[in-house]
Amino acid sequence: MSGAPGPVSVVRQDGLAVVTFDAPPLNLFDAAMSDGLDAAIGDLEAERPRAVLFRAEGRVVSGGVDVSLFAALAGPREAEGMFAGLVAVARRVDRLPCPTVFAAHALCLTWAFELALACDIILAAESASFGLVEKVIGLTPAMGGTQRLAERAGTGRAREFVMAGRPFGAAELERWNVVNRVLPDEGFEAAAREYARELGRGPTLAHAATKQVLRDYLEGGSNWPTSGSPKSPERCLHRRICRPRCARFWTKARGTRPSRADEHGISYRCVTHPGTFPAIWSGFRLHQGEKRRDFHGNGHGQVVQRRQGLRIHHAR
Image (cartoon, rainbow, N blue to C red; front, side):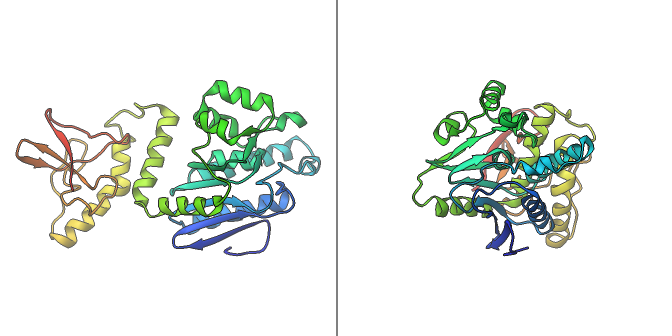
């Protein structure tokens, strides 16, 4: 839907997909914005970019939700369907396998801020402010914003933010660890684009793995699932990324497949040549005295050490 007319557009350039909200004067969330956002996310899922930047045109990022959207609901069943759709939108953004950046140049309320919280990075101009003001109409945030706010700032700050129901400045939210970076108003647009573009130049598989690792941690803690279980992080990532790539490499480069495996069937010969693949483990080697052993990583970025005395070295 690149360049498509409407309140939401997606423009791609050099691997960066820029999603722009443009429904003047306030970029309110209404039926057209909902449909446009759904289509934009579908476009990103169908043809995955290296990075995504969400931004808005106009004097505000968004003034909130058009209340006529709620008035048009016929009853509880329709309301339930609408709120389920809102949750799904944020979840789909959160699960995009590439880095996602939200750039807020001005006031950013309700749905727009909840969407920002579903992104990996939030950039804010010095004059930007953020708010979840649903209490004004007797509601609580419905896109998962409260939970994601607690993830970043803690439950105490999340309670304060939602219950206060007023905008908070960018500098204050940076202190709360909600906003990642506050940038000068002048040149903010160019700086945000360059930041997202720089993330897009990074290792895409490694970024996807990082997001999955953090998602697993948030859903089950640092020890979930247990190492060696059928769904343990190291086995899942190995099946998804490491094993097929190593098999292709060894078949092509050496004419043989890796044969040495541990008790879980995971090959040790994953990164014999750093800089090749898989990306999430390349650049590291294990040494035991003068004898080198290749290794794989677990889902929390740690080395699965089979023997004592192994040391990690960065291979230059």
